[in-house]
Image 1 (cartoon, rainbow, N blue to C red):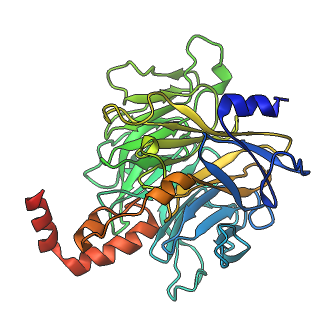
Image 2 (cartoon, rainbow, N blue to C red):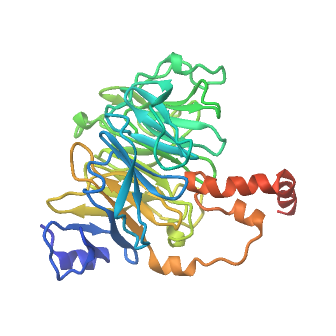
Length: 418
């Protein structure tokens, strides 16, 4: 076991997190978890296993609340007293029975993957509970570890679904004539119009990518798994974060062959992260972290209990020069991150769970940067164009009504003045 003082010297900060929140180093409570983050960041326990056990996936809903899913539940976590810790939950739905591995709120309705498809749960009265059963949007294998996973809405207004190599993506999923790929191989990223009728195959060749994120330029970043059985063999390829490009394949051809990153028809590799099990991915597009992390891509590794951070190329001298281990843990209770999301105040939320393990949600902040992030008075157009995390459900719920109220002419004028 590592020496705690040594960790402090080498890493800058060690925080003990228990069921009571942040604990001083000298208290040594039972059943604590050591979580390490860079100097200046603060970690607190937002929800424990009693509120959300064995979490598969997590999102932030249109009202800014943390929502988690595991086997037989989708729960909205509540921090009613404003102490930055959830004390209760309401059950949005007990479906899908096998747990959702992808969640995205479209207003008060929820899109999710699980139980053999991509589904919609409707909440017509906005009470935070689904009105009825599942409405299937897309037939695809979902519920297994290599099946359909994350759902997001892109900057083009279309919906995206990421599927692993066990999801059974075929030519039938290229039902729209505009599909860049007609004959897919292995895992794939699917794209669906606003009507959710029909789909394209945008990228294929993934082994088992679980999540992805868009940056401010609209580029897609996907964290794909390795072929762990071939570790130490010459043809082994590590887990990699790709800048996914339409019509490109990520190179997974068979159990023991995946193209290296230098092949001309491979998408750019922005990080090779060795062994691991890729889970949640997020791009930080808020103002409450230091400038160094704005625009950074965060990628979770379930097996080795870490959250990596990296800056995609193209930011000039800004950002992280190399990928770093942003968050990690040790201890008998483990730290197995499954998903990651950015909240309305700029806090980063990380959920843990999977394969019957304990569930929790952690909240990461940078107090000094949060205090400095007070902004000058903005015009309505500036507020709309500068809204943080613009693709998040909670952010869309703020800027979209404002944009509709302002009308197109205001934005045309802003473009002319730029």
